[in-house]
Image 1 (cartoon, rainbow, N blue to C red):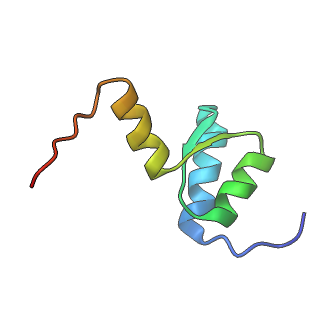
Image 2 (tube, helix red, strand yellow; image 1 turned 45 degrees about the horizontal axis):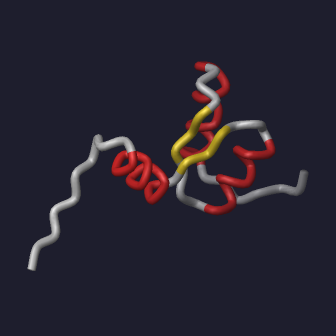
Image 3 (tube, rainbow, N blue to C red; image 1 turned 90 degrees about the horizontal axis):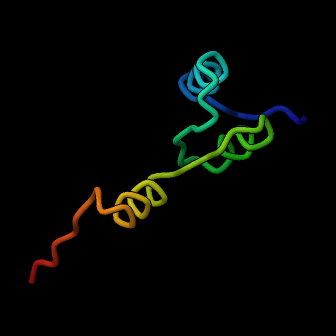
Amino acid sequence: MERSSIDYGEAEILVLVLEKKTGLVLLNEKEVREVAEKLGFRVLGTVGLLIGGKTRGIILFKVVY
């Protein structure tokens, strides 16, 4: 694997997911998402989180004009 430019906080998140064995990590940065996927994590971003919440009826959207 080539060297990446993941910052300290992003690396800490990956370590935490490894330690807690959650298998799911919420990330937005492309490079970090790719590393997480290579480590076998299921990755979800902000947009995916919002769509999933809407689909399950957890998040309600109101159209404002």
